[in-house]
Image (cartoon, rainbow, N blue to C red):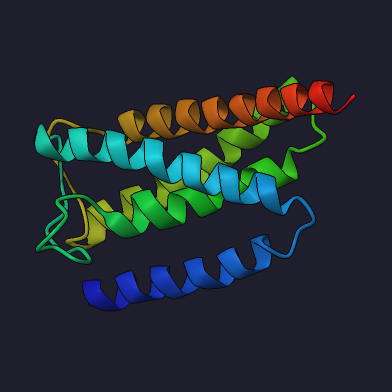
Length: 156
């Protein structure tokens, strides 16, 4: 059953990625995706190596101790949508949307932890996930805002 869930997540991710790349800010979309994949994979490796979380069933389990589907694919795609929906938002709107996106991912993670063998918490809780996802998403969003401001200033 877990393999079916993983393949379902992968297919959903591919569809979401396809639709996210149809937006006009393609450079930003790709940059957000790559930054999020880089940072989340780095954090995920640390958390898995420290045995805070275990992923009993995972893609490419011979090569990765982390959930490569989540950290390098689904989570970065979520961040792309978060960036796109907050592109013209003010700080309060960005924070509220970040909390909503984070809550959705955290709920999915908790359900997977409770009802499947995809994830097992050891020295980790849903609150750790929520805080980590929220702060990292906000960090990448603010970093992109800063990058775009510098780019605009240089073009003038």
